[in-house]
Length: 260
Length: 72
Image 1 (spheres, rainbow over the protein chains, first blue to last red):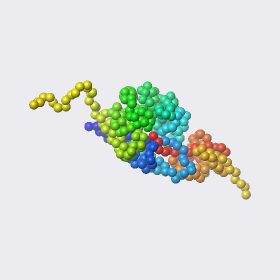
Image 2 (image 1 turned 180 degrees about the vertical axis):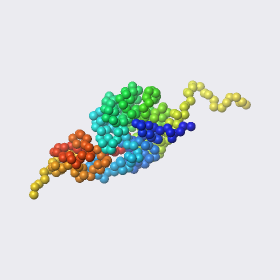
Image 3 (image 1 turned 60 degrees about the vertical axis):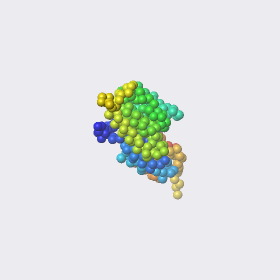
């Protein structure tokens, strides 16, 4: 039996029991977001860096709903379209309170939201030199994944499909190739639509999944948060259990000896 | 009575009029910024929050104050 208690996810020397990372965007309210996170069992949440609303000081703050002492905040660079913007954002994020574990995401196209890998690679190099522990959102290209690893990334986070598309994993082969070549945490980031997509990611050998829209925009976000939690656990157990070989023809489950 | 001279600065894109020689610390206090939950840039340079009471603001200074919000 797989002892899931001992099967922790380790990122930048930090241990996590949950392999599900969730985003905090797109929820109807902060309290809905906080409850969904609790139900998902996630110990890491992504957060965005934005201007403080100085004209409305009564607006609720994320930190009042999700305690950064209990849940690891993973500041991201969502909305950045070049290295300069991404670096500025993460340096500010670090300044808020010492955050060094960050998610780098440099987008290249406003419509498909695919990452600009040249800018991403450049940013990874700079951030690693500055002591950041960078988890990198990237495309599902094994060569680029390798280059990110060589540039000091702390986790490789290929997309399953475009951000928010809900299409699920489009390129299983590439994900498997990346799995084989890297010992870094491999986390599927973006494009998942339903809980079974997370199971598939885990069965491909990924170390975790990052989900936002599929939970936040589900008709019942709380139930979906729970479904993703269970799906990740199921996928991990299935992967660790060693699946059977695929064969073309049937193979009866009952013995053929002693048939009357 | 000597009139205090006012200067204009920008905070998060909005023009604000403040007393000349105000410190960054005073301006942030006046708009009730929770310092432990934000990061501050002055003219695109990150400011060490421990030093804000020593920084005097000048005309046309641009201040950016950011915090964490929900995001994917």
